[in-house]
Image (cartoon, rainbow, N blue to C red; front, top):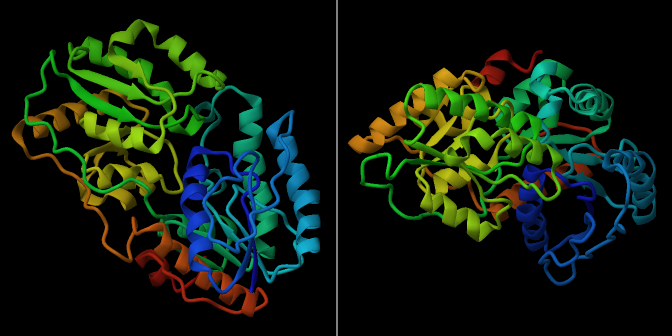
Length: 400
């Protein structure tokens, strides 16, 4: 079978995580298939098995990224698909082209499609509001009827697709992601949290609007008001070299610089090291499709302070320390709870998932995706597929 894997417009941090894990894995497991991967600019060195066609690498493009994505989705990628004539077209980008002339499968990891945030939460940028709140949902609404299958990473996303867009259950498959970090890591601290050795919170996230870095300044002020400013320290991974939002964020945190350290972008080995050198993952995010960061924290045996949202509870279960991500007072309360649990040795840590669950290897994930691609191609984009659904979907019997 001929598979074209579309990764041309992979750009987000979460998308890169999927890209680095899935592309080599799918190449490794699809030994009887002909694979052509359409890579984003500058990534032709990705490890692939012998015989995989690496690929049509676009030249570096200048100008607004969103403009080039429109050109790709409406003109360039359909033309490539017509030339290559695959049996199935598989997109792992935020969205994808509509007309590719064959069954089309989309791995959807764009939470803006399924969640609604207020304009205040998105921020003052008219560009961000148009792209995130308007374009992404509108584009998916027109795209999904042409998709043979939609792969999502959690039942939560599947439920939301059905509720918001009416996507039939038989077109949705839930396949949890893999994790690139090695399991294990250093044990949790045994020393009490003090002003000399404060609670160290690792926040590995780009400064996207939905990552909610805007809560950090008022949170630091609340910690100061409560006399806890010397008991908590945040470690960020904001890119100040190319991210103007990140530059503005750090400029606004100058009054609490003693509580914040920006590490900048980190490689995989550095992420592992900083999980080991800190006490907990801190992720007060406003929305996610499924954050690989939850898997990484579980793999490195660290507790998780995160938002009281459906995607977070699905990932962390009863082990999470849940906060209202827009309430600095509530976040302070949970940090005090976490500190007490660390001091008492009763801290909660999410379990590392077993085989067949979230957190399996990327080769396992790729094998399951390959099965979906084969069935979609064999059905010509029609027919049904066994799907993993949440209890709520099963009880609903597939109705909206």
